[in-house]
Length: 255
Image (cartoon, rainbow, N blue to C red):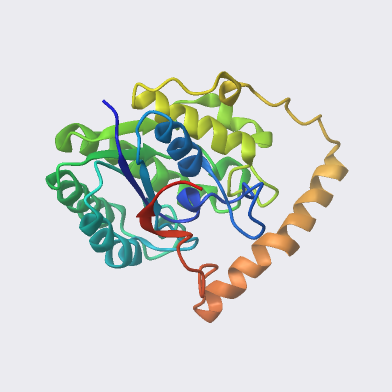
């Protein structure tokens, strides 16, 4: 099947952090743009929209993105949400995933093919693993069940052990690097029965083994540069996505 109208919904994962766009300073590219680029080669007049914004919680993704996307009448939709919610202490995963399934049912009801994701393991490199990891496991299990019930296409990144390679992730340890986004795009295209460029499956070398002292020094530097600002934003009720607009709010050709 060839799709002609693709809309991507979500947060920083779908916005493309941390894969800087090679031609547009200040904008991230990421897996969804890469997928759109390959799909556009198969269909004349291909249209692509990406409404994802970093830091967005599930409720804002739904209220800000679902309605506008349905009005575009896409034939392919990707929906990735909930990753930011599980980082909040008051998150209730069963309630979240019940609402998640309702959204997927609405998107599927439009007649579009829908892509949803089991997230790759990010928590093994981050603090709070004992609290957050069980939530991620719950979400991933629920997403698989929802995909089966709703007829969505499941992209299972959790099952790909190559995401354990630190080179797949950016220096903030939370968002994917160019290599990570290319591999996600390869998984998505494979799920759509579209052959991805072979180099997107290529694996970057693992970083060299570091001494205990070097590892601790890197952890301290990471905490000061990335963790502390995140905690400060939480305490102030702010988000990394404040004042950030979607990079492709309307369906249009790739340029």
